Image (cartoon, rainbow, N blue to C red; front, side, top):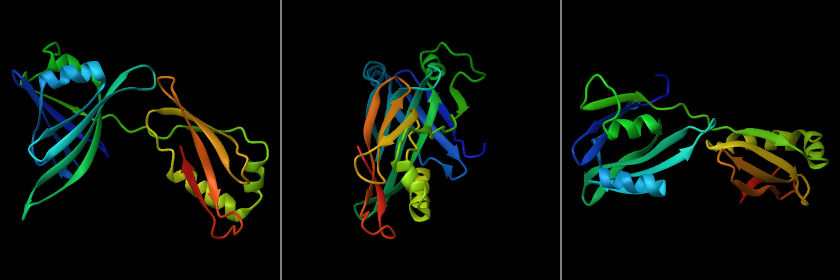
Amino acid sequence: MNNRTMATVYVDQDSISVKTRSRKGCSPQRFIILKKELQRLEEKKYLITKDIHSYVELRICDAVGGAKVLELSFTWLKDAGRDSVSGYTERIRLPYEPFRSYVAGEGETVDRTRWRLLSILEQNRPKLEFQSRKNLKAVVENPILRHKLGKFLDQHFNWYNYERIVLTDDYLPYSFFFEGYMVQGTKTCGGVILHGEENIRTAKYGIHT
């Protein structure tokens, strides 16, 4: 399984429930979602719902190649006593069409009461394209800035639903304007800006959108 999560989906007359298992362990409960809420998800492509103390954010996304993906972002919480809760977050991604077919009773499974499948591997690093004329050259020629920019880019832009990030020169020295292109064609703009460039050793890169 590597770092993938096993999701088990149970279908009842008016609802489904989801349980997860990964190397970290099992989810503390089956999360129940009403079928009428799934109909709303189909229309709006986005839904937040609650079960006991826990929450899940559901989103239908377009993936590379045109297939649709169902992303479930769980906040698993349980009563910790004294008016407090404890828990953790978990995100899984499932192929949407097989999920929809099974919930609708169209899918073929060995056991009609449950459906098991592994989550889709996160492919969350879009391609980075530099179209910089002078700022990239200036950064590369400075070992300190080269290290800072490389580390920053390695830690950021882990945007799973983006195909590519195009970076061009910003008017600020050592900084870049970027455009992020999503799978469905929409675009996000912003900047990778070096703050405190008057002292290269303490300067830090930040992202602005």
